[in-house]
Amino acid sequence: MASPVHGVIGLEDPADRLPLPRGDELNWVARGNLLTALRDLALPDGPGAAYLAGEARTCQVARRHLVDERGWPRRAVLVKPFWAVGRRGLE
Image 1 (cartoon, rainbow, N blue to C red):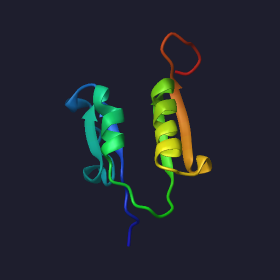
Image 2 (image 1 turned 30 degrees about the horizontal axis):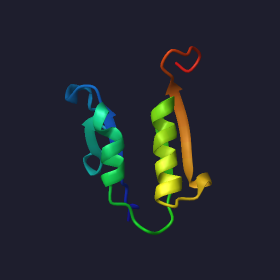
Image 3 (image 1 turned 180 degrees about the vertical axis):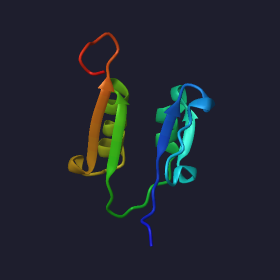
Image 4 (image 1 turned 120 degrees about the vertical axis):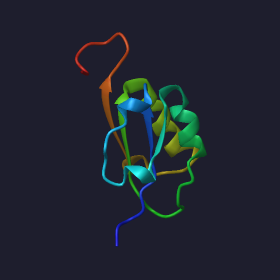
């Protein structure tokens, strides 16, 4: 039996949606609504792991939300910033 997945993926355009395994279990939202969708995401109380990837500041805010507001252990939230506005080297 597969473990449950919960997630939010931000898109610039709905046509950008990728054919991910179990992608129908994720919330696909316009990029500007990403953090609101994360705050609204029903997450289980039990242990888990969060994988955050994307723009560096958005990842920081999402991590802060999970750790500070939802009480997740910091080590359970893995962050991979791919880019930062106005910065080079995170492509």
